Length: 95
Image (cartoon, rainbow, N blue to C red):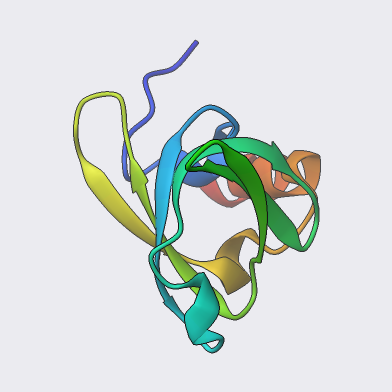
């Protein structure tokens, strides 16, 4: 498996990555942080303080912590698709 970097994050599975909501049009989502435990087309499910929290992708900006310690900000609009579609689209862009 390829190492996750800021350049290839969109080609990888987000489940299992630490994440924090750094901005959102709904201020109640800002500051939610924890592990991504599931992903749908429009939502990230984040385990926040022991409880699952659903955060809509499109109105939010996320900061992911990569295994090497790098922090990567991603606009939710960039990932607002089914995980398999995002991975396929990211792979297609690189070819």
